[in-house]
Image 1 (cartoon, rainbow, N blue to C red):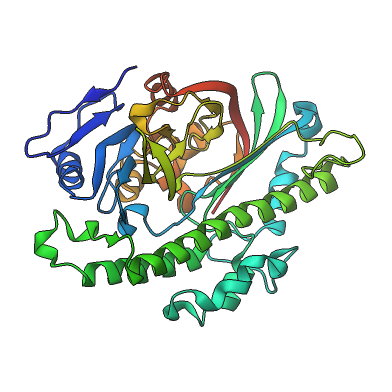
Image 2 (image 1 turned 120 degrees about the vertical axis):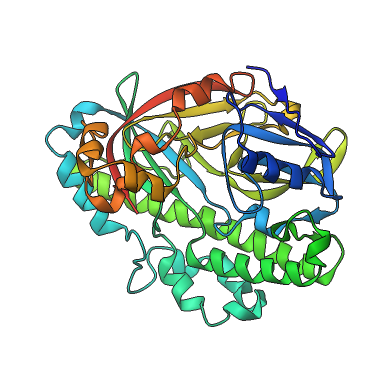
Amino acid sequence: MPYNKLNISGAKSDVLSWVNHGLDHLEESMLRNVSRLPCLYKHVALMPDAHLGKGSMVGSVIATKDAVIPATVGVDIGCGMMAVKTPFKSGILDRKMAGFRHEIERAIPVGFNAYKESVDEASRWDGWETFDDLHDGVQDRKRKAMVQLGTLGGGNHFIEVCLDTEDNVWLMLHSGSRNIGKELAERHIATAKSLHRLNELPSPDLAYFIHGTDEFKAYWHDLEWAQKYAMKNREIMMTRLIRSFNRMFGSELDIGPKTKGQRPKADVVVNCHHNYVAIEEHFGEDVYVTRKGAINAEEGRYGIIPGSMGAKSFIIKGLGNPQSFNSCSHGAGRKMSRTKAKAKYTIDDLQKQTAGVECRKDKGVVDEIPGAYKDIEEVMRAQNDLVEIVAELKQVICVKG
């Protein structure tokens, strides 16, 4: 559907929305605040999965000129998705799905857990060479960051095995920069707030750094580091997931570069952030684009839009819509808080809504029930001018953080 230009009382810049329903007063207030920022460039783009966040809507794309807003990036810097299309059909999974789920849980720590020692190439990652340049407040966190590299985390992070409509097996996961990203974000958010008279900002959570200042340089350095950590985190987990897959099914799946004229055995590999900042050119100017729960959908770029466990997910190619700053949604988006979901739904509801999916079905994940999320197919219809669907996936195994 085409976007709507929202009529929000008191807004100083346009809000272009792909949301196909009305917004409540809290959501409008959040958008109004962002629209009044002096550093905002052009307009706010609101993706169809948008919902309330901290300072700004999750599912919003905010371009700024000569400034970045750390709370708008959020505390899970670099959170995103990785997916691999395998050359195998669903038959390979027969009678082994429960065993494979437990194998994944043994191979990759979930929730607050970490490895006892850093794994695979984690200790050799070149990011450790600049760890000493990060914020002083995280200098005692290096070992924790090292043993968490290659781990899932909690909340809505997950590892999934999916089937597409042609019966191909896909491996997919969702995670970010773990505790080190959170620690860096919280310290820089506090610094940003200390630089402003908070009563002069539309919201204290919109305190920003100005390009050229020492505070901006420090945040940008740590932001880029955390985004690279998040990307590497997903790569290590995917390597271990593929290793588990090979061990379980006797295959030789590989996502490495082609060698000696041979093609990689994985047909498609996608790794994309959906909580990050990048310098991009839009409308003829270089600007800082913050995608808070949105992905880069420039023309021809692959991306991943997951649904909740038990719902569909989509592999897409961007159409490069300039009004969205070449962006699209990052998922279905919550339609109710975790607290409300726990109050409304039972374990019975969870079992019904995840029928056919090999996953946890206990009270610890009731807040992640599909019913707590928007309808992913409605979200996809609302952004058919932003993306082209390449593959439609259905989860058959889901490991939750």
